[in-house]
Image 1: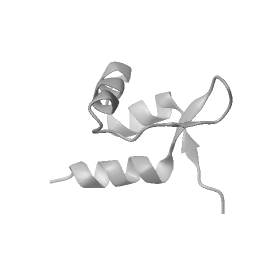
Image 2: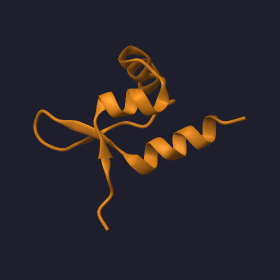
Image 3: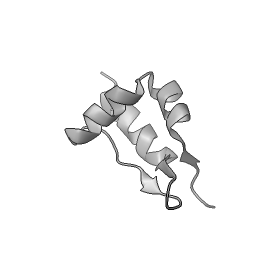
Image 4: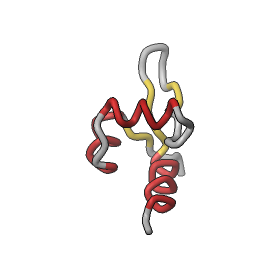
Length: 58
């Protein structure tokens, strides 16, 4: 089964992070990087976001 990919608004809603917070964390290698879907579109694999959320829970 193909993996679901999430666009930025969905990632923001799921994580509770703003756009700038997501890109700040990515710059510090603390958040998964998106994959290219097309020349202009990117999305995050749902499994990568789930793993990141699980790693953040204390």
